Amino acid sequence: MKRHFRQSLVTVFVSIIFASIPRVVFAQDALSRAKGFYESADYEEALQLLDTLRGKTTNTEAAAYRVFCLVALGRNDEAKVAVEAIVRVDPLFRPADSQVSPRLRTFFEDIRKPLLPEIARQSYSSAKTAFDRKDWAPALTDFERVLALLSEIGGAEQGAADLRTLASGFRDLARTALEPPKPVEAPHPAAPPPATKPVAPPEPSIYGMQHMDVKRPVAVSKTMPEWRPENPVEERMTFEGAVEVVIGEDGKVLSSRILESVHPRYDPLLLKAAAAWMFKPATKNGVAVKFRYTIAVKLGT
Image (cartoon, rainbow, N blue to C red; front, side, top):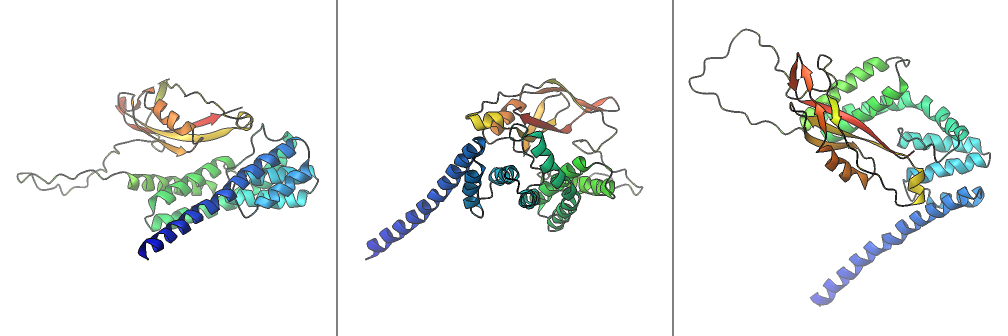
């Protein structure tokens, strides 16, 4: 009886796992076929396939191709609503130049850009809430998004400068909170009592872009790994991301991490290459110091 019960549980568990596989395969196959119809100018067929994916996947690329089809069919009002939905989910998404015509890219940007100030404020509120909960990782991610959006908005938007200052400060605090604490040594018994006069705040162990009195490092050797697309779609797409490196006083890379994924296959190659990069180190008052540096990466045309 017990053996039969265990066998039944295993059967149910395996059935649950494999029941989800056809849905994933269907979504991938439907998007691939929709792209083929779109490239053949069969926009109605492409749109019908893409509509079957709505609510079943959060694939931004599928949502973008749905916008392309709606515009091609002259259904601009529906396309505008679809663009707004994409931007609210992924405000940094923009179609690659290889995917769309200049007219379609302009259509997308004309709808996207007016939404960015509101989304930046919402992202800041979400980041501050996570920060107040001491939930450092999502706070850091949201503050980075706020700064990226403000960089694109520019200084014309009212309050953008103040929001940038706040987001940058909280971003640095969240990043510091994520770093492992340094061991604290017990004071020597014979140590003199602490001074009563005010003590200047200690210098940071690692400087960054926010320290205006530090001369930034200069790349001496920064070889990027080769990007090899695996299919025609990847050959026409552009992938962007960012890697953060900590550069030591000797100009060598002490550590590196992916701030924004470029591509799942490319990220490990990028981190491996970053370990061998060399820089002329950052300096403060002529003295070499450690520096945290963010480097943007772009693949494709």
